[in-house]
Length: 290
Length: 269
Image 1 (cartoon, one colour):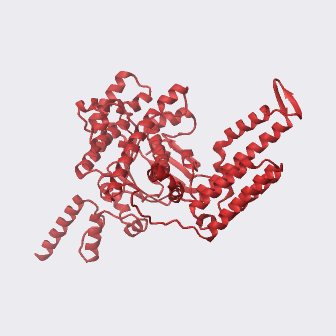
Image 2 (cartoon, one colour):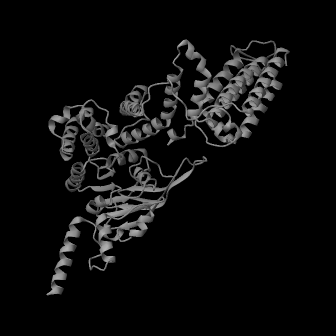
Image 3 (cartoon, chains in turn cyan, orange):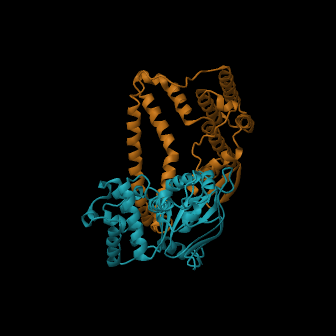
């Protein structure tokens, strides 16, 4: 399949030419495919935030290319600007970027910058609000009267309203309660299905990644260290730990069980799979006894 | 990002003699140095002061490049001053006329010395902030201005406000950077359009910035109250400021230089 968004030999150096010079990305070849749910993991300072800011043209590569649907996004000014709308980026703690008098106006900021007509803006604002579960009467409230979780929904809706083909979210669930985490994750899923959009999710939570992502990319020291479906990536437990990361709790439990000599499969990383594996192991044991 | 490259009163940690001096000594030395700069009026006196500056920078181990980089923002003021001095200094030795403007030899000298004076003034004060942490700097100021407390000037409160303000400059710069990126991701354009459009484009940046500044101020106030802060009354210090032999030596040295430059200026050198 053809990649919708890719980077070729992407490198980025911060404060080039000063004593504070620091390479944040080194020759990164990254690709995201249409309709996939991609997870990016990496510890603080690994370069993952720098990487995602390149994907919609907020940062300019020191060397290398960023391609969206096959065209270099820096080929001309118009393309760069168009990419910003096609590749939506939700920053960490996005609720701190709200500024308008009403929720409705804030969500419409993006679509307005796109130059859409009044009717289309209205449709998009309402559709985006619906996706993140905001009620109609909340649209006329001030965003500053809402709770923290609600504010975050408004901010995410502000990006979704641009109807991007690729939606990138940097730790969208950080600091939310478990119910909030679940509902935001399912909102993102709904958006992916409805628009057949590509989702790129940055997270620290291995459990979250194990449950949601189709494919994982592990960034370490400005390079892509590991890549593949969660089942494969989580087999590299010790390597992940060396990078300051870990494996999901379930995987740890099952690795321990295997070390104790229990016959359970290797690639268990969600509670669902764990349940299945335990039931199978018990059934096998029963059979053995009979 | 360009915003991160600003070095506004940035502190360069180090262990040189200049770093270890009492902050009050450094503040007084800089004041004396500035006074001397304004007394100086000839090549010889400027050379003496330049020697003092070069010696201090050399001992401080602050890279000269960082000092020079910090001067970029004042280039405009420098050019402005130089041009004004060049054209508006009356004198006998007229070099040439351009349109209604006259350039005199005195004007050239004046412009040259004015630029040197401003550059050396900035370099000296930068050296102070590069080698003194903001906390020590405000401690020093508070101590030096202490006598004003007798006439009910709230010195402690002013010093605390100053150190908090200094502390939050980098935080606010980082925050501005973040909000700018977030709004640009939603298609905000800060770089094009006429003056009115640009001013309007700042609203999505300024509103969240002010809100977060107020939020931070609120949180800080609560955190300070939790630790029983109630102003300067009866407050003791973790770091006691103490003059040592080297402090007196430095002060005497700077006083001597200032007097020397003053006397030389008086006799026309």
